[in-house]
Length: 404
Image (cartoon, rainbow, N blue to C red; front, side, top):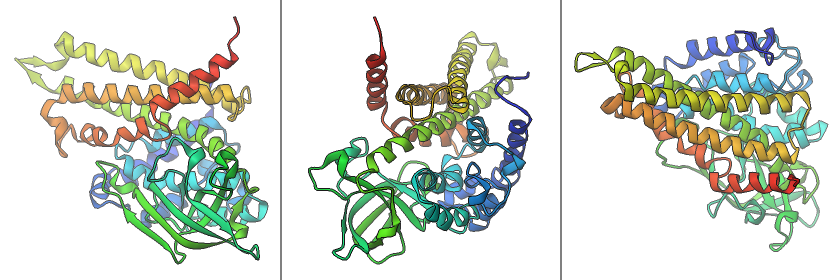
């Protein structure tokens, strides 16, 4: 069925990404997740397919065309990219390929100088430089205004000396640079004292350690410790003290991507469970002939369909300029959408587990995707802002705009 949201370029991109995932990723994804890494040659193939930073202008991609020769990239292209990458039910593998560099480079593209963009973005799009985003710290993530990692400018103004730690850093094990939120102001300066620095992760004083977590093994979630790390002053993004605004600006596209990712995984749960109800027989008949089982399938379809419609509506608002990505009302809606998508994923995964029974606990057989998703899904509920924080943030903004 045709949709007013999509055109032939969206269809071409969907086919391009789907072909790559089905050919290069899905046959090996479970092994890579077990290994805790994706082979470097696959990352290079991902870059060669035009799938690293596909949204940035050609001038920062060595003049190469967008993936699938898309001439004008919009928010729906980004949504489709995330949806198709999410056809891989191993989120750690997805994020190894796409999330680290995308998150780390977005502030460079949006807030960097022309010189910084020219220095870092082409090499990143070729897969030659890898990035990660460093905001969350061991002491917490949601209270970014009070982060503790410090960056002190040298007396001669040539470099910063950075001390602190960042935790839960996706792709941190392999990144060459960490786009890092640091405190350049006084300890009491709050949000006004934050800045963004591009920290070379091979510099003296940087230590990296893989975190042992329940899922997402191939994403390389990392603890990065910074001990008197010297960073060139030219690696500062924007002006000193502008970091909080950059962090907030980065949250909205991140939350939109997380919501898209979560809904795509919910669809895998629903589809796999549906197929199982038609295949599996109990008491002499298919599971699908049991009304209780059909009710579970219906609850999944209602939740996915309605939330995906909201996702498309918000993507439309962003893509048409009806509301800019940084509009506070859009930010409020995206916060609530991300919460809703996480809840839908939790619902669909649980119902799929109930339908699969013991098969949902094994790494082999028809329930293996649901088993993996059950270990990965918490990142969509906690990552990018917990649902408690985001629910309150969203409704406070909407209440401030309400009129009696």
